Length: 503
Image 1 (cartoon, rainbow, N blue to C red):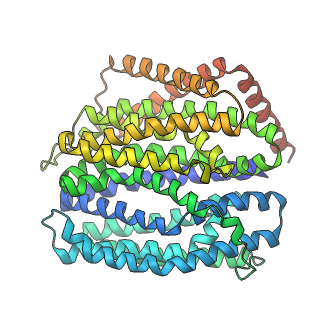
Image 2: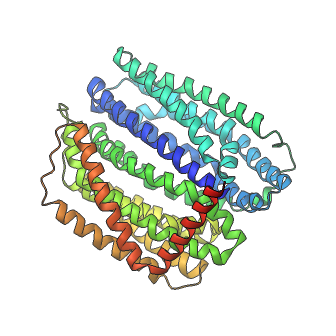
Image 3: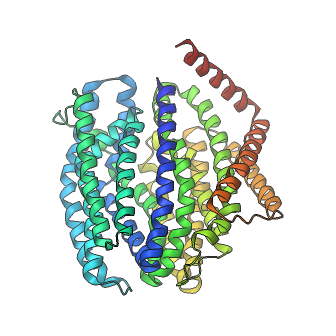
């Protein structure tokens, strides 16, 4: 059952990712062409700020997920209802604050941004962008967490993908028809409401036993404040760069950052889909069979890291050729910069290749024990970025984030291995060193090849060809360097294939 759900999560996650990527590339380009870099920067900046409002969740989501792994593993419906009741209680209490914060931000944000866009337009864009998230948070948050815990993230994905397709098509039609940015964001808000209705209907029809009015188990949420600190750290890494650039440079530079980040976010989504498809199984296994979990952890870490490095090697090779095509005809600011891919790749490798260690810390529930480490990570990021931005601009905020990630990634590896698995961290460190060495060799060889695509189809062709070369190289070399892991992975695949064939 777990294997089947993991496969479904992966399949639907990948399909959703491809659709999201396609629209995620098309729509920003349309904003650039029809409205210019300043409006594109405005939309992106507002989107990043709205994300910070999820801090009002106060760590409830992750704390609830960690608690649900335990009770779902026991299939205890009463305990599940009690955990979800506590979760729902917190969401209702903070939902009002979410709405109020959106309104306050809509009023204040236009006064702090250097832009030629009118105050009213900026305010309405903030309002329409934020209210959709607020409603989603209030009505849908608890159920989304439940579906993730039972391994049915693919249901979340299907519903979200349908709405994303509709929203993107409407945006394209409205942009082509000459409507302004306020109307375009208004369409997003309307479709978000539609998504909530679909989700609630699905839950009511398929999980009639769920009762959010059960006696709430608030003890299961005891680490929510510690989780909040970890979430704050994650939000800082994902969004602080854009905020600092917004307030200390201008929206055109924000647009440059966002367009590069858009490309690397495509890979983030692929990696996130792979991770999400199996995390629930690892979470349940940790509390069910520790010995088996350790072997599974090593297997997952080896091949997950191999995929991370392989994906970013392909991205690094193709990012500038793609940017030349994507920004063709955009003259208000230069988008071609050979240093930005280097900094973005360093940042993304540090933040993604550490995911197995981060998962282990979360699954084990070591939120409180590691919260001061997250505070230090956030402090390094903010302080370094604020200092460096004055001297190095866009490079400075990236270097500030890299400095923080370098500290915390090493710390996560050491903590996960020594404190939770009670072993030397050298196996994970060795895997990093091997993957980095392979990465450097690959991009060195690729640098001697003339890659100059003349269309998006050529870019896709190069991406497929490079992936077919680089991914097997990483998988084979990882298997050769980790013979025990390879044998276990092989046995696991054969076992699951037999189960499928027997059915």
